[in-house]
Image (tube, rainbow, N blue to C red; front, side, top):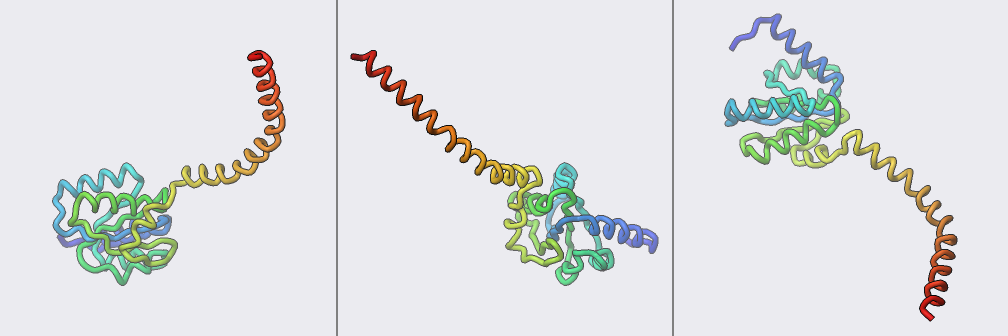
Length: 175
């Protein structure tokens, strides 16, 4: 299908705007997937706040200019779907990885995170990044651990005294 110049400019502007605010990107070759499978992938992407787009490689190269995803330009060959994580850094990687497990014809080509091009085999590293809530929970647990330990240390002498008095009481009652 041929696109008019205005349509191409609109696509480049839209993808460039998304790329400017995205945290990470994943490109995957979708050759051999059915329309139903692509529809499922798009539905999952919407649920997970992932921007998913099939775009011509030349338009993608233009859209990536001036963004952190310019490093993806060299890997843009063949029919690709591009997924951008907008909320969580690993959302697109999780989406593509999980979908590729169920559909062998979806092949991960490249990843970009923080302006660096990553190999396709590193998708598990990017997908395993914690969400914001998980990271905050881990941080709070690390911050809370010393306080909890200090509190337990301070309470232990009183608890030990109570256990000793209870043991003496039980011993006297048994005798």
